[in-house]
Length: 593
Image (tube, rainbow, N blue to C red; front, side):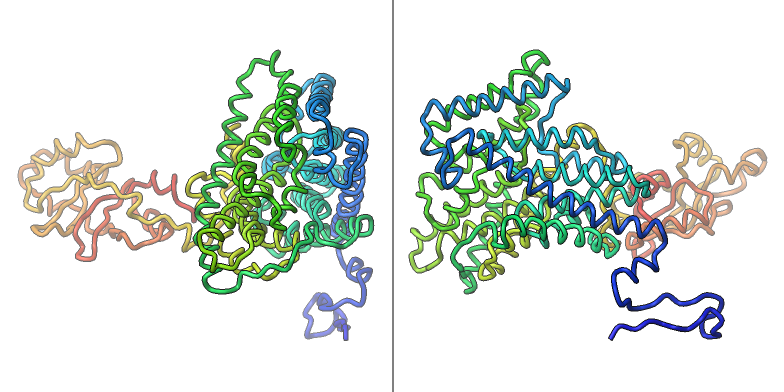
């Protein structure tokens, strides 16, 4: 039973303020207890989900309409492409590129790119600000382009539209900029959830990729928005998974091991995907502004010419992925289509055709995984694993590798298919593939464009024991040493010749640290010439500065600097022997406290 704390403010157990209720009888009661700004924010979270869901339904209906008009219908996109004449396969995509050109001339700016990097930039750099009008134009243009054959994904339009709706609501109703950032992430995640019927995966994508955190304060709003959008999409399109496939199982140890062995290959393939996308974009951006306007129709025309032989390259590739998951794609195409799709998607995106890269990465991973599974099945007939099951593993591994988000990749693939029987190799391959891809290509598919443009994103927090920089990383081993019996008159020229902030270190016969000679502390001694020939290093060295060890954390080193009037501190080993120094400047440059 729900209960509320009914004590009054005068209750001695309460002190001077009434306690907040622990449980609420209804959502209305919960909202009633919130401050006005918080009430408005939660209502806007729901509104963002509603708008994202309705926008997803409208854009998908637009996609179906474009398909009927451009390709004379057909039960599926791929069937329509296959039944179209060779001339139609060239003319329709070229017309789509001309539409992109006209839109670019109308707004006098490029409308290309997949949009997710722009959403990340808006959240982290621009305080959650996106232009609604431009996002709607870009979303509609992306849907039309994909419907006319662009080798990109429909999800880019839905993410961009949902994110812009969240930004518009935030500006319209005056929430804080922190809340505005969160509403933008809610809108983008809701667009993905509604596009593919993946409420859990969409929410985790928003948290892991867009916000970089699974904090509970972020989890609630993103989940509420994604669930709201998915409910609306399910009412319009039905509750079935995006891909209805047989119930595959890869649960035996050797099958799990095979999935693990494939993971580095998938990670390498994911890194290649990211690098090729970036390289093509850089090369096409070097084209002069005048000729660059013609890139969209030229790229789409070239795509159409290749599609005369390979119609699977047209559109987002949903039907081909489904065929790969069912094991219906011949081995020759399983080996050729992933790389042709990569080239086609990179060409379209780099030329300025708007659309998403999420679905092309699924295409690339599914066919690559299916091809590897087919080869393994032929080499080891006793494996008894369907290539379609390995297509699932390939999808998850490449998605995790391109996004650097293994958690959301696993759950998105699981929700797309509803197949729990491959969850073990799915999890292993995603984790290993993401680590492999990150080692080869530090930036993900979504942060690489920002890196190329010089946009700096904050480093995401990690546990202290993972992110701590060891003292040894800052160690300088060029410490100047002297013996305790060295006459001070001979040491003075060496002290004066040291760079600013450097000191002399007095060490014993075994290299153990005895003290420090700091120039600033010896000014009185230097001015008295009678003392110069009478004293040695041991007479004037400072024994009070505590050295540091290589085992200390940077926070402990910072505390030592706070207690010492020195620019550098000596570092000693376990036998108290001097091994080098650490400077305050290096500490402040690299340390995180």
